[in-house]
Amino acid sequence: MFGHYYTKGWIKGYKYSTSSGAVVVKKTGAWILEAEPSETGDFDGQISQLLSHTNVSLDVWASFARKFEMDIFCGWLMHESNEGIVILPQTLLMLGERNIALSVDIYAPLDDE
Image 1 (tube, rainbow, N blue to C red):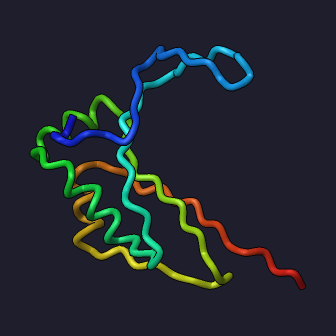
Image 2 (cartoon, one colour; image 1 turned 30 degrees about the horizontal axis):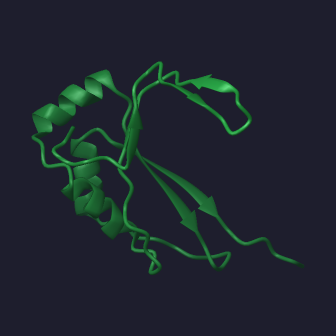
């Protein structure tokens, strides 16, 4: 899919065993592509990197959007309790044109006070 090998994926109904031996059946399918880790927190660059690996037309993206729920999930691990990120307008436009939601989990250090 998308002309690029995925990091991991499975089809709906895929069965696997957990370390405890329980059998789990996946309720949905998934196609996952992970960005290279970034120590500098180049959030925008990582999103652009992911999208650069998927060179298909916007018509194909529209077809996927009608069939699948699509998002880019990002975990933001902050070193300080007040940090920020920038996502450039061009990157937001690329996400919007492809009907991709941006999901972000933000992890901040706890204050010891």
